[in-house]
Image 1: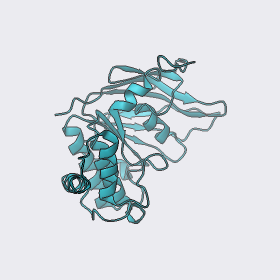
Image 2 (image 1 turned 60 degrees about the vertical axis):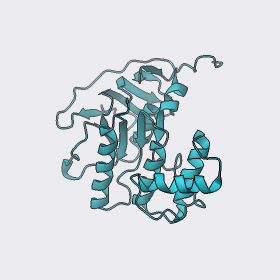
Image 3 (image 1 turned 135 degrees about the vertical axis):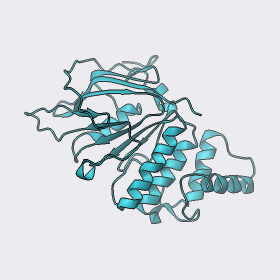
Image 4 (image 1 turned 90 degrees about the horizontal axis):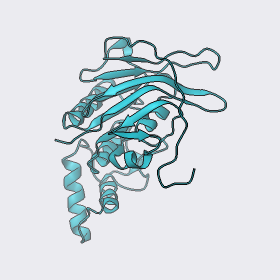
Length: 255
């Protein structure tokens, strides 16, 4: 059982010079929790996802992941948080096969056997034991949306993370495939890993079983701010006020 990352956020937000990206997000996630972030395009859902994984700065409210204050200790959080599929940030290399992706990740983590034949055998065995059940020899460019998600999830878990962040879960997949993806994320959370997943919406408000919390981000016009809602997953959260805190560099880095 993995000791996952607890997440505590209060009135969390990000505002640039031109717009408010997201704001008033409140979270209290226990290790091994499964959290869904939902919202339309432009609502800041991917920015929030990356912020929770220590890969995007915030400048409003407070955020603590695995006991580490963000953004001050973002590098520490990055070391314990892995990304699943995040378009434009973490996605399969077009010219590598699924098995070669695993081999590459083993080399990066220092867990690859010395001899190429052993590395290849280990990569195929790990892939077969993972959530990915497709062809190990298919190229990244030929993966469908569903298999792409599963491969990136398999790669994320190789690093034995405390937190896994996944984007675009409901993009270009069937209803059955989406149900399967949520099931895989729940299985991962049940091992103790904290899981954050982004989707656009829940049709008819039907939240998948096993989701512990839902953060719904509205599309907010610059002059008409709305408050993000947090569900448990069936009870509405109360609106929160926003407090400001400056972006602070990692300890030992120049400001």
